[in-house]
Structures are given as structure tokens and as C-alpha cells.
Image (tube, rainbow, N blue to C red; front, side, top):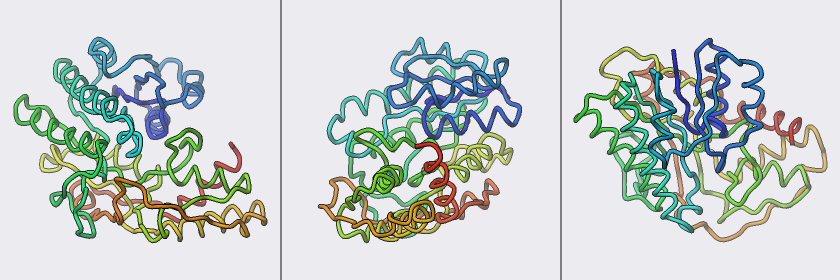
Length: 322
């Protein structure tokens, strides 16, 4: 297949590029390096010179989108400005990238005759819904500008399917983690941030009492979902939104306990590091747990890594690469 991965130099995007290239597909990456890193994909340009192409461009520029999608059969749209706190601080840029850029990619993909448009949606779409586990067709009001942008993506994709006959699949990611997730920067995700701090013998700060819970999802499960979304032939499975998760929840207190356990195997002093607590973070959902029944039944999804198994793999990677 000929596949465009937008945001292909980012954490999830670069893992997707690597997997698809190993599977023998032709891959093109579009990235502006706002959050992606050239070192994530440089090895791919060297290892797959004939199969991998990098286009430095911005999804906010239509000409970049058209150039990137030309001749491609499928799009994996990962490019976005993530982070709830970032969107609260700067909602305008989040909207320009996540909504305007998304619409540009939809239009460019439609005009280029792309067979299927698979995109990164978000569990933040569930907003203030109290129900657990989260089921795809029951959502609440969004709690952040970021959540609004990701919900708008779903609405636009659905309209393009109805109006222009495009095929799409949206994957609502639940707290994805794993190799190459950046521990540095103001908006680092909780797992790489805590790993970095513990490795430096610094005390991580948990927002709130630590009993907020998340469905932490290892990167290889996310790769499996993207591959299934690209290849599924059942017409009932297309033009749908799917939770992309493992289907178990872990509190932040449990998470830190696991990190101290796994990192403690490399450095025993880490087991004794004190954990601090701060205020709850504005815009955060208290609990997140996905039902993955729909993905299992329509896509044949069978996640291979539990949270603990994935965390062990991630910790090994960070220990060897930080």
C-alpha cells in the first residue's frame, strides 16, 4: 500500500512509519517538527531509501497537504497539537492545527481520491460523561478546547463520508505510551515525565490525590488498531469511531508504584523516592476506561500488551535511551 502518515516524526507517527515500512509498504511522512523529532525518522530514511519519503510541511497550508497526499492510497492522520493544558493556554493555535489542518487534509484526501482516511481521535471527547466503561456512542460535553477540536474532527469525517462518499475510521486514543514518547518539554505526558524524574532521583508530582484513573494503552496495541483500520474489508466496520485502548484502568498511584518497581530493577534507590501531590489539573477527566467490544467485534482487535507488560517494555527503552 501507499500510505501517508501525517505527524510521522512524532511519537505515534514514527512508530507507525517504522511498522509499515517493515511490513513492505511505501510510506510518506508529512511533518513540520512542531512536536515531532527528526531523530525519530532519520534511521528510516537511511534504512528504507526507496520506500520512505519525508515532506517537511504544515497541515495548515493546503499546498503542503496536496503535495503530501498526491499518489497516496491511504492516510493515517496523526498530526495534531496534543495536550489539554496547551489548548487551555493557547486555544487558537490548537484549533488552527487540529480543526483547520484536519479539514485541509480531508479536502486534499478527497480531491486525491484517497481510499480511506484513518485518523487519531481522542478519549477526551467523552468529556463530562460519567458512564464507565466509555462506549463510543455515549459522550458528554467537552472539558477543554483540545477535546472540542478532536470531537469536531469526528463530525467533519462523518459529513465527508455522507457528502462525498469518503471512507474514514476514527480511533479514539486512550493515554497512549511507549518508546519514543518525549519526556521533555512543557507538555510531556505523565509516563515519560515520571520516568525521567525518577531516573534523575527527583520526586514526581501527582495532580490531586492520585486516585484519578486512566486506560493507559501501549503503542503496539495502537499500531495494531491502525493496521486493522487500514485493511478491514467489512463495510459495516468503515465510517465508524473506535476506542483504542486495552480496556483496564490504572490509578496514578498505581502507575507510580509500577514505575518504581520496574525502574528499581535497574536502580534500587528509585524504589525509595518520595511522591508529591499537587492540585487537580483544570480540564482533566477524573476516570477513563474504554469498552473495546466494538473494536473486537468489527475490526477483530485483540490487544497484545496489558498496561503492566507495556510499561515494562517502555521502561527498558527509556533506561537504554534517555
